[in-house]
Image (cartoon, rainbow, N blue to C red; front, side):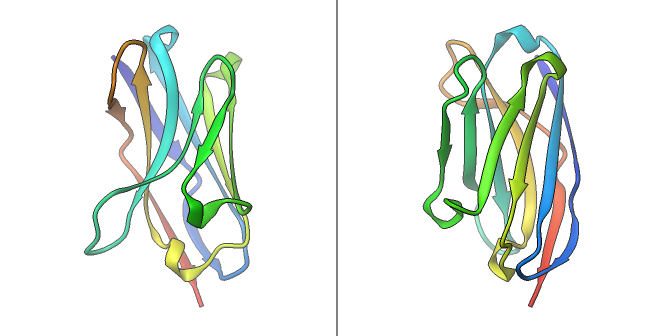
Length: 119
């Protein structure tokens, strides 16, 4: 198993930026990719971005393309989500998740960090 701890959420005005970090510990050698998801009040959890741990390939949901950037530091076992040009609709609890090698689902989750974007 992998343990994940997020940091970096907060309150920002529309147009501003925030940087979320996710530190992984435990069986990090088994990580295939890491992702960020978010859940707004009254809505289902949705995919935001993911990055493959070995090749660094990145994938984004359409609504954040061009504004958010996911990256990773394998030496530090950390994934980072840089969020620019934030909009009020980005307000949500953001969760970091890890998918292990030979697994089809994200099975390890962080506790979540609140991101609030004011108009």
